[in-house]
Length: 262
Image (cartoon, rainbow, N blue to C red; front, top):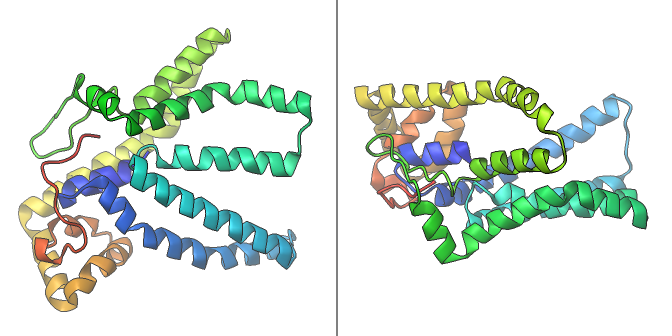
């Protein structure tokens, strides 16, 4: 749901959507370089495929990337993958399984809640009056210079509500406590990672370390700093330096502070 892009954008003082779109070339490059390694590992594991299937896989992957980048531009990073990959998964299911009428109806009933949820999230991003209303209702800004949290606009809120409502309507209310425990068990590490990252970024930024590193990178690399900083950060674990890159080197990520609601 774009949590990484939203948090990084908050520290970089830029728009999450702009950050996600302008860094999408990294995603494309990663997948282009990763796919041959995937094929090689599959061959070594005894799961070989001919070139026809590999071309098909490359086309599916490329289509997925194109859809998700387009969806990010239109809907923002929170709902982009849900909106882009949902239809692609359905299409892939139809191509692979070629279900008959009975199986198709059964699958549609199972997926109806998720389809309704995605449709609602897309609607909240495309209807200006609805988007504005959800953003303003119950909006919270826990700290100064941090993104404003709008509970009724956040995709995570609607995911939880949809899950609970679906369980109640389909007679699975008894499973809710176990599902909550399982969700916490699998999600707590992600939450802790975001918290730790934020604390580390604040410490490095407040102490001036991140600013000095950022200025050094900018003076050494000029405008290439904005391209190479994520790579350097991934290798050395110094991602917070991106938050303090001088504004004149933040091309093409122009500041749109105060932060956008998330």
